[in-house]
Image (cartoon, rainbow, N blue to C red; front, side, top):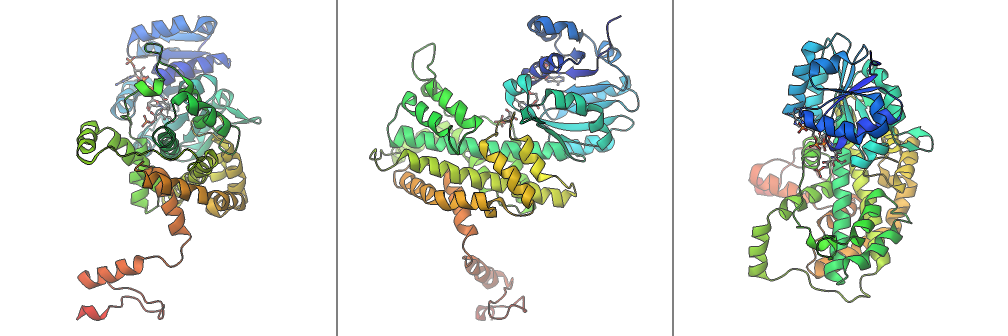
Length: 469
Ligand SMILES: NC(=O)C1=CN([C@@H]2O[C@H](COP(=O)(O)OP(=O)(O)OC[C@H]3O[C@@H](n4cnc5c(N)ncnc54)[C@H](OP(=O)(O)O)[C@@H]3O)[C@@H](O)[C@H]2O)C=CC1
Ligand SMILES: O=C(CO)[C@H](O)[C@H](O)COP(=O)(O)O
């Protein structure tokens, strides 16, 4: 009889099949199941020598029988109803103490519910980041759920995770949906980071009239400095890639309509509910939504004329755009960490924020050199805003001028930079002690007698202006 599998995996799509090969490669006997059996057969063909460690199952019953007890089962199926359906199908086949691990991008509230309703089995939400390559070679993983659930899979997860200086990029970050919450915010930051890079691409293309292949070395150079990150690295590679069919730059043949599966939007909605400012992610979600309105954009361009006008080559320098991206990135990540701090308090999760930064240093899509410094800054004082930490305050002091110049030039030339400008506005509002909300308070009081506080009588509240009659 074949050796019983240490762990099972359901869903052999992009993430599942790569994670399965990673698990098998690290020496863990594995059973796999996929709704469409042909895909399982195809996967076993691709597994090569690793197939000897993998038990393919055609039915859920065979899959469950192939697993050691207590059973540990990773789901990598689409978020939402498919996860609930899969749990319902498995539950009658499982025993008390078995564990289902949802590795997809589930809504953290669904995970809270599934963890609460799991008994007599256990449920864990596991955010997995790194795309197909990360899943195959070592992802970053954010776990949430009961301590006992994490203990059951920690050795397997630590062996398959990305490694940063000998530290595996996986951690148990809190109860219930905490892991999926952190993955959601990770994706929100991902949206902002990607959008800011896309905006600089727009400046290079429309402002400076550069061809894609001319931009590639610029992004590659930036990847050797403060901006060193996976997203800048792949941007350089993307810019250098030609379309095999037409010979044109790949970027020139891809439609400018961005898809989204929901995590960025969820992050913004959650931030709004918690009253946490998250403008860079909001702008990035808005930009994706607007990008899909192709017909509207075409009509508006016909009515108002094409937006972007070119810039003199020496007006907008490489150093200026690099500085803008540095400042924008610091501000976007800082907003994300503030949101996680608010959620940790609000949900009573006690999320270890320095660990979050640590496990994002490798494997995940938003990995970047800055995360190591963020981990250190948060370890020094996890309740201090990242923009106030000396290292990041220094970066902002050095580069916010470049962000301002870049946004000004872009705006003057009709080149939309929503995420960069929202980051700049956030920075300017944060560093202005006398803002303009006194006008809002006066207006609210004028039309609705909502009351205000006075600067000269700070102990009194609910005061009204003479307009109140
Ligand atoms: N792609 C990525 O970069 C990342 C994705 N994720 C998340 O991981 C999860 C899986 O994504 P990904 O691998 O890209 O998805 P894919 O679409 O590539 O694969 C989905 C898998 O789920 C199975 N499936 C689909 N619907 C059902 C259902 N109703 N019941 C049972 N099985 C079903 C499919 O089986 P079948 O072959 O029968 O269709 C397939 O094996 C998602 O939550 C995604 O958001 C997380 C991080 C990165
Ligand atoms: O989780 C991921 C990366 O971290 C997935 O690739 C996810 O699909 C990205 O989100 P979207 O599809 O909305 O761009």
